[in-house]
Image 1: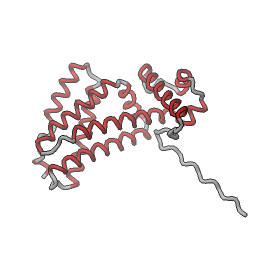
Image 2 (image 1 turned 120 degrees about the vertical axis):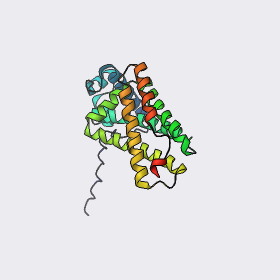
Image 3 (image 1 turned 60 degrees about the vertical axis):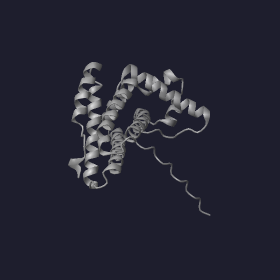
Image 4 (image 1 turned 180 degrees about the vertical axis):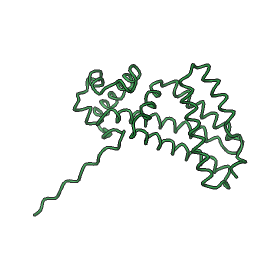
Length: 214
């Protein structure tokens, strides 16, 4: 009788952990790795830290480290996904208040403020973002996140302006969320007072009605 071939093990997605642990000890080790990576990136930046730094600081053996993360990009990508999830929750919360067209501008302004505050609370997010721009696999994670955010904005606008053509709505939402992300990422490179001024000016440029989309 012919021996049945073992099913191939699926390769990890680029920029993500190899596996998500389920047992408590494994989860604790997994979280310790990510916590140490966050500390090291905050100290050295995303370019300078190495897998060996994590081994030294966390006490996790190389074998265990590579069991979860095939490379540094997977660690950064896993952290990026966590922060992206927090950002998406903020956007959902801010857009939930859109019940009429006049609510759009205040909601977009809240999204700007929420993103800026999130970056300021977690300075390592700057290093994570810079790393996602430098790695092709991680760029896809960023693009996928932007697609989700654009979809959230489209859904909110659709609630209050159902007659807007789908193609117009999709391009408007993608452009708006891209501009918000760019403005915030520029602002975090500035001193806080200047950043607030820049973001205040940017918010005056955000759409305050949907007349141009009909």
